[in-house]
Length: 228
Image (cartoon, rainbow, N blue to C red; front, side):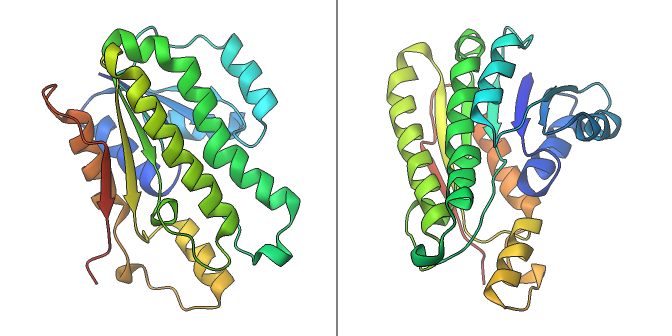
């Protein structure tokens, strides 16, 4: 099987990439720079890399148009993301735009480019969303807006691609023990203990289940929350 994963260098994306690599699947990993691509290629022997900046939509579209993409892709998992917390009255336009570009526009562009390969394999698209894609809290407007939009993208794509056999799942974890979560705690002025939150490996295993689901069923949405 061939899987394309974004965000493979950290958090949920890294946990999923390790899991798929360990069982011998073929990987295409998106990296933001040549140096990062070299690191990923060194860590995951045999993996292909694609260098693209998810925060630059115009450059990303150009890169994808020129890229030698696989003819068949069994899954595309959008695990990359950024967060920048601020009240609406203090939100910087650049921070707002970056969250929309990375968390929403980039997944649309990648999915659009890979649809022929996903259709050929009757593959699965996984959008790693968030609890913030269901409910928005104070200071989370920018991030939640991008994740609400990602949920809408998943819903529309799911119905559009049903006739082609492409399955679409939105995964909505609560707080996960990742570097992003550590940044969030620092912004909130709270002490961070990774043991309080879901392990990225747990979320990755749930995604693996989605990818391996027999063809007779689909999981449109999956919600996970820390047990505590």
